[in-house]
Image 1 (cartoon, rainbow, N blue to C red):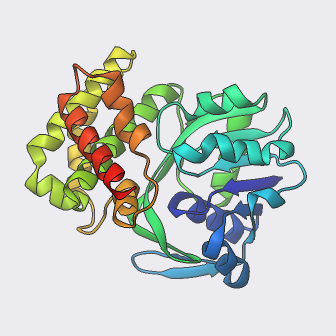
Image 2 (cartoon, one colour; image 1 turned 90 degrees about the vertical axis):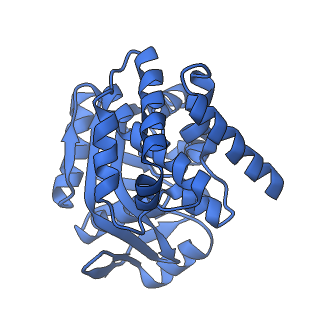
Length: 294
């Protein structure tokens, strides 16, 4: 079973490291100094109470060769389509594809590009690249959810079982994706807008957080998904996170990197101009902040 993990950031780096540690045949794809460091030193996962390292076969996407049985895309949402095109020669009709990028329509993007077996999924984790070849995972939070073709799901589930990674197979994957999206969309926007971690946003701007979550739930309902119960659950989750935990979009703003503003804030702002006035306000402000730096 040949596995590819495209993108070795906080999510992909952690998954690839766990697969490699379990002895699975996995190749990770990355670039730049992070890739070179992994090729030299392996990949290190730094958790709250422990740190571990494992060798990991790592390459650039342009070096991909041979067919893969499973490809997990863990890139930013704006890189998904291009990443697929770069590895397309390694995909056949039996290849299982899944994206763990932020957003609710990544499976549709892959289905439009490929005739392979596409699953939908999401990962709950707080992690990021601490420095080249080091993935920093904060807190105990980890869970993967996925759904789709049953036989493909069984194959993917086996990988997670062998790697001792928590997962859940769901029948209504569309609702499951929105359940993750409501949290990350709201708090990615809020942490970036206020330039503060999740705990500080929760403490200082709780009512705004609640209002933003309600706006996202309203947009979901327009698309046939009821996630009203997730508003309070998202607030409860935010209240329990480590004090310094933030979102990847906030970190990308801080580090002057390309950000997932369109998929995490713009998607709601555009879809619900009337239902989401607060999201529109924050989206426009963040967009202006990006343009000033160009």
